[in-house]
Length: 322
Image (tube, rainbow, N blue to C red; front, side, top):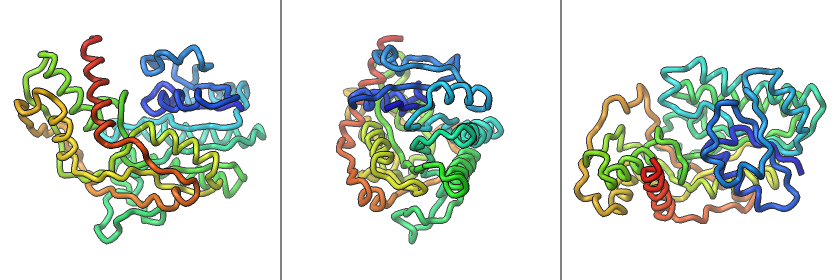
């Protein structure tokens, strides 16, 4: 079975590679930008066929998909940083919407019939009301950032291609997920990186933070790649599924967990950096995952504390390496 992963060099993409390599009879392909670093694929890069491709360039996508003729596509590639989307809204919209359009159009035009996983986001729901918790797939979409708008476009475009052209798209709206290799622009990874630097003596004992009152449901990245695989194994084309964890905390509580895991945690001060505050923030994200669980039997298995330990150990190793 030929499996194509877009965004293969990224955080989730690299974990999905490791998951897929444990499966039998999988030929693994990955689309990457020519300048993308391969650090996340260390140890697996020789087991994957990597193809240089920019999803915003239609011809580039056509050549890649015609060559591979994938039976399954995991479309993970995106400009995925909410904060960056405020400073680069055009790039965010082009990468996420036009990039997805180019994949769907290529599949349609050339008569390929893969199962296509479309990685949407919980950000499409925006700021929900307390009486809407837990958030179901039928909740109104109220995007509050250019990133969220781009994901609404990607999400609904994929549904339209299912309805109009019978492309077998399956959409997932993932809630907060983290673990080793998470980019340092995300809160929990930024905190872990700063703690590792303080432990190594390379930084003053101060952690700079944004909004600590935002409520999130946390999940391990290794659980989510299992969910993505099951989405194509057992999900129904045309449907959308929430995927989220079972541990709900304020961002500040998550920070306290990381501090408790560090031998220097009690000596570290926490200060708010205004540059880390968003123009509008989504502060309440608690999902209902019943639809996905009933369809696939999926359930997260990795404890929150292990996720935090592994994230902190990842940044400790990266700090030593640098």
